[in-house]
Length: 396
Image 1 (cartoon, one colour):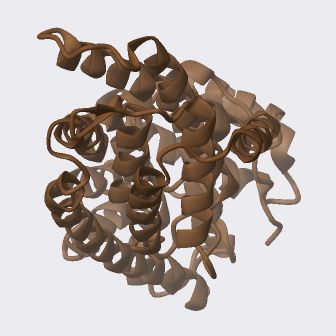
Image 2 (cartoon, helix red, strand yellow):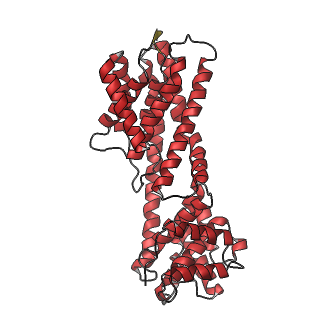
Image 3 (tube, helix red, strand yellow):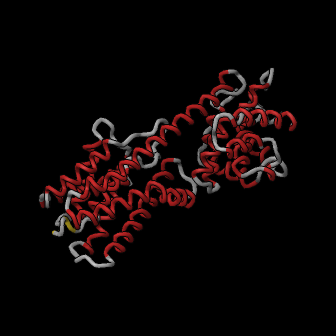
């Protein structure tokens, strides 16, 4: 996909250089808008390569330029190649010193090309009552194209897995910031067609407010992630669990949840609960050998889980996370699916980290315990993730 985006960008730049820039003042206005939106982009602390779009102004400007048919009543004369060239140049200019992730840059180039090419049959058409509806249809198609690209890139980045759940997760995210971006782009295109380029700064204000709100929300989430990470490290520093145990359970738990088709919100619950599931061990006067709670009696494991839930409840995380931590020692039929995933993955890491057991025997023991302790569907999803090269447990 990166190669396709690169070839698209090269061809667009070459075509624009050969034919020249049509209506340079319009291209400059949209280029400045996209560059400013990209310059205002912030990368959330601790976010990985798959972080959500945090530059709505730049994205809306890209969409508005791709769907621009008139400027102040005069027909726009730029083509799809110029749209891609302007979007690429403006994005790179606004990201000086902070290069955007290749995945996000590829998506923006391909989405701009898709929207501009689809808009070409409408280019220069006289306005009609159905014109806004056609723009909305193109908006829906572009949003679907972006979701397909994002899911494919996520699947490639995470090392495989079923594509359907990833696509559903991207489609669920569209009604959020994505709807504001799409509506802003269509409104700007229609406003510039009627009022000229002066409409650009006016209709950017709602998106600027949206971007500020997104940044503030990300700051709250970053603080919460730091709190959770500190609690996850507490048991390791105190010597109650093996180094990296919580992080491995969280990483493997997300992979298993994605294999089972969980939504993004449920995957976050799995990750946060996995990071804090051993907090209750701090109440023990003597650490459990290697931090493995699986061999303990059910009553002791239930007491540790309830104590951990009481601590987690004070962190202000979602009640769903607290429920997962508190229900770790219950039979799997009494647990929500997120708790079943954390319990099974935690048991696997405990057993596989024991030199006397190992990964293969650990999976065998989990399969033998599917009558009461572990759901068969979760165990098989774990086996599928491990077969594709999931994180390996470390020794004691």
